[in-house]
Length: 59
Image (cartoon, rainbow, N blue to C red; front, side, top):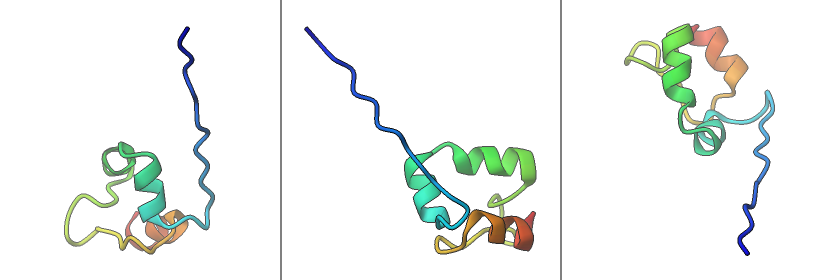
């Protein structure tokens, strides 16, 4: 018998972008596609920035 284990991934507005991208690898592509965040050198975020800070600074 085989069991599938699900791990709930949680982030918050205080989570740094490095944590967001570690837990949700497709987030960077989605953020760029939808909000143009993180796609080029002028709108890239720092790994230590939170998601709200990234939106404020680059969105």
